[in-house]
Length: 273
Length: 267
Image 1 (cartoon, rainbow over the protein chains, first blue to last red):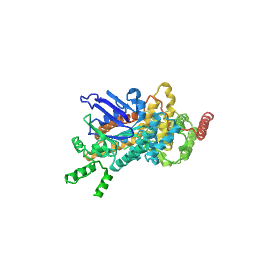
Image 2: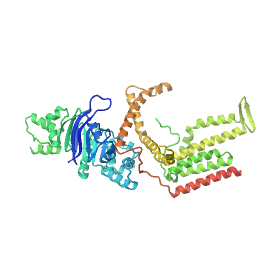
Image 3: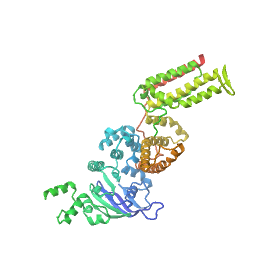
Image 4: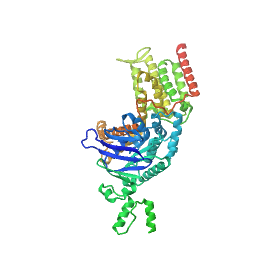
């Protein structure tokens, strides 16, 4: 079952001659993590924004959890989708951490007595409860991104969209956020759509969609796409670490398994040789 | 940059004044300023000064903090007082030269003027050292509420105010980054006269404006994604609760005002 259906969507930015998205049809399976990878300007952010009705769809149709994405249902769509943006600083609205989490709840007119519980719960889910009274200037980029995630978790969405949400973080903070998302996906059953230009980030997900020049070039299971070296090289996407290792082993005439292995599985396989 | 503080910054001593409702503190501060203009005799001025001293004591903030508030505006006070001293007429004339004169009335008036300045600055400092900017913004929002009936967009103004407060540190650190980037390219901000220095700030202001507009756009989209609609009612997480101590404090202020007017009428 697909929770997000995109059918024949095209989009051209006002004042631009070239369409940013050209007749896109793709679906995102329920409770799975799909990563959209592609270069800058491939249209991946535009696609994410269209799904959340942050820019109006001009051609084609998008359905989110049974609701058509249009001006009339914009409130419903925002309720169902939690969106985390790239820059941690520019999505922090509140003057303190708890105020920021409260911002979305205030918008959705949640009564105050329920707010306190939901803020606490959301901050607890992202391990930021002890920072509730802190101001944004006192937080690191990774912590701000956690607060942004708490802010959308408190609204209890079904779908989480991450638009290069880890690209401005240091490697450790990035890893922590990816671990957190994995945990949330399993524990709370979220559907995750992550946007990245780094295939290494796609490793954490179930499916991969490759976008190039506003067109879908490939989509399928992560293990199938990332092991397809021809495909990855054709779009200059670079291979995840374990696949690079396999390619080098192959060049030296050492056979390795065809299936995708993450780093842990790779270590296990290597130590068994 | 921005290190000069005129009316003092928040000092967390958690005194009784700190714990009062910010709306009350804001209104009392405003009311005190009005009272200052009613005080035109020795007794009324002494009374207001006494009240202010009690406020300062209760706030548990060092006198130095209050003094620094007056110090920054010292020149304004001195110049205004001198103008008052030399240009006032009435009473006994001690000294005269063309249109300048020192009269007994002028001396009294300029002393009152100095006191007024000192009182107003100090009461504002009492407010700002005992109340965080966030509380002040909340108080202003609440006090503006009646303006809704004359179609003033109070909610939007309050949102703008709170976002402005939130982004002050962000913009300040951005200014530092841009200035450092310019310094790394050989710019020296400390050289030259006032005009030359002001000119050197142009290459700081332009990138700052560009990035601020970009920031504003991203923030607007992020707010929209989280369901913000400026025209819809929102619930509030941060609430101000009026406590019994606020009522007592209000009664005290009423008493202070009655005594002031009594002093004014009787003597």
